[in-house]
Image (tube, rainbow, N blue to C red):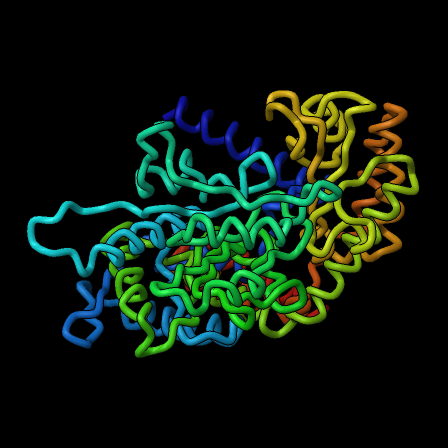
Length: 481
């Protein structure tokens, strides 16, 4: 027991130190992360986190295979309605536990869908051809043959490679698709699935352009948009369903400030030739890919979606303003900024800088981390390999939620430039700077949150007097705020 106690104490000490460092002393700029609100975090450890609630549609009725799940059933239905409101679409699948799983579920469903008319004795076929963003041009790993698309696309017998055609990019901006060339490629290759979305994401995707070309094809290809990075900007950045997309997938923990989960949404109407694809998506979500789909995070996602639907426009507007202000300030400080300057270098939460004049991407990302500025190094579209990356990718979403505005990002840009260009130590300045941004915005106030946290906490540990005393103290503190 003494050894166990020592290990536990050491781990707790490290947890405390890491929490303090990341939440009070660092400027967090990883574009694929966020900090959920205290209420969302506490929802994650509530009772459903240890439960199961498997269910599927059978003969037109939703059948649940466990008892004691009325609450989680209601949570899932409430969340489906909140998400449908957010996307303004009729269909939402919530059981995927990551954005990558959401993509793989769609790819599995596509295989089942294209084989629905298969005659007895015919071999089960793969997708004939897929179009997507190239990995080295910012495409997301999950929609590549080396990622979730693995084994779902036919191989070209001549080359031995999967039949995947990448979107062409403009010569003067490698972050935008060349629509003139794209139109010709579409007519030439006739893809069955078109996948938009990126991980290095600065500009809009030409969804409407593609929809107008393929809408009368028979069969019409499925247009899918992986919005993992920009899910929380749905609307102000782009509205794919209004532009002709059939399916949107995404992670719920990047710009969408929820727990780590995935989501699939669809605008496919009843009676559409694609309507059975949605049946296949549901079936590949369960039982095809999940059993326990992490019910604690499902409750947390409902709480986060309440927050998002309440603060959506205000939050999105500030994120976009902050990203453009940050990009321009970095440019003014002498750092090369990627993206189309006519669009403010970015239309999302991301800012990408080219740092090859000052060092290698991984080395400078580490130097920034040592100064409490957390980023990630990134291979740019003209880099030969990720191992020799010349870029750094940053996102403003998390610090926007902690209250930073355009002026604050102007200040931060100077600190970044000091580290990147001059190799100046700004660690203590960043610690002091972060002290101004400790209270989360775009959610309930601390005064409103404290008594609610106390109620949830008390319900999790109802019979332990020590925890009850903590709850009582929370109540007292809340009354003084």
